[in-house]
Length: 623
Ligand SMILES: Cc1ncc(C[n+]2csc(CCOP(=O)(O)OP(=O)(O)O)c2C)c(N)n1
Ligand SMILES: [Mg+2]
Image (tube, rainbow, N blue to C red; front, side):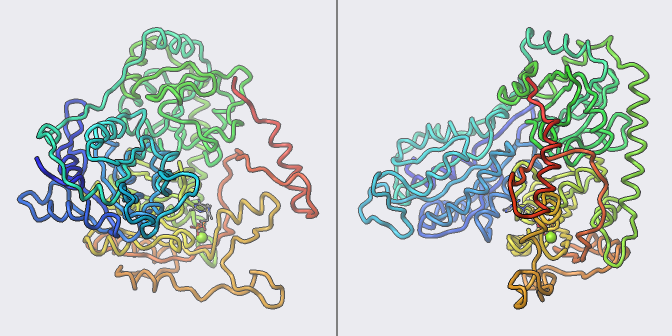
């Protein structure tokens, strides 16, 4: 079949499917793109031809406004679909391509599949340097796309058409492998994209990529079971792997059979419904006092589908039992081996099923169960209080989260990524459904929120998606509102205005850095510093100018009414509310390691350094 490289890629992608548990999915549900000279006549022409063909749904094209945004949307899409379906992203060369690098890192850190197709410089080099080409005096084969290498789980550059078939197969394997998945980049020199080649028909035959459920090796299982059987104070740490593997029922059965409490990471939140008696909520630096108290005493920690980020382990201070041991059930051997744990390399669901069978006669003692119940009762009161603070004159952020939570249907989705909200959400959000809580905290990338909400809604059009976005994040990347409007994709966006970086402000203050550079203010001519008046910026007007409906609210009551109005509407709606960045938040009774200057002329820094040195003494190596 004679096609260009671009046409061959589009035709190939349209024919791929994934399969797990006997259920098949279309692997690529579409392709985002922003065109420039590096892809307009190659992949761009191929997407046009596909749209005008007899089967326009084969690989639908979606226009984005910023390349980083479209990769975020693709990551969110894959997350909502538990990594069984995904999107491709095509960009021009140069800045269009490098705009995708941040998105690639986010996908790879979060273990989410996205296929990136950046344009690249001419393979023939006949007219070099082409517009936007980076010239390296030391090497003729380097382009800006080499920046994708460390943030991609597979990277290739297709210098010749003959290289394409094997590169495509490798790319699909990595994208559909739960242990290896992340961003995959196929850099496409712009001349090669337009070059024709005679392809074998088999390249375009429908192909099904089986997504495996690896089972544990018997000897590894025996070691894990032996460790678990000795546990007096066991604790489960449920990570994103539980949700991607659709292991939430298996987790509940296992936990109930053994009476083991379940703490959750950011990506694992929603693994158990919040009101399950064994659900102790978030663990770590932004965890609940219940989970953190149990973590301090735990003698065996069963980590399932978690990579044990510093937020989860409170920078390795969360687990203080002198003989604490870890059992790690994970598809990735890399994660299963962490903290010198008993490594159980397996799919979360498959692993939990065999553990349930192997541990039939095990149950924690009644004293521990009472301890779990007590810790939970205290924390649940703290949440109730934070949801209804009645803070004046501006509401507290925790009240915004409470109002949203209380207005949510079980299947609604909340999307967030950076600022003070991820911590407050992890601590306080009451998740009822495994796909309800969508906080990107692997890369915690400001600007993910609106683009991510777009991708989540594309993946789950039958769910209402509520994006929470801070003013800082909004200013970085609000542009995909335009994409949502143009595509008729309805988002509910709550824009939380606190005049700057509430999160980093609080962090800065706690570290003795006096909230320096974290507020949005005029430069004061008298002090010469950025501590003047509040800026006359109107983000609500900005959202309206992008084509969204806007509702301005001032109180929690008005917010509640606006949430109902937004839900009832079929148009993307931005609800604007100002909050007090200094309002109180419940303590997690935990810690996060952010180093403080060892020497300083400032009193504030010296005091913070002393506190830092004291906290650091609890840090462990878990060997
Ligand atoms: C792209 C990016 N740049 C910088 C940071 C560091 N950072 C984390 S939160 C934050 C401030 C976020 O401000 P805003 O969205 O207004 O949320 P708030 O902290 O006020 O809740 C910054 C600068 C980041 N996470 N991502
Ligand atoms: Mg802010």
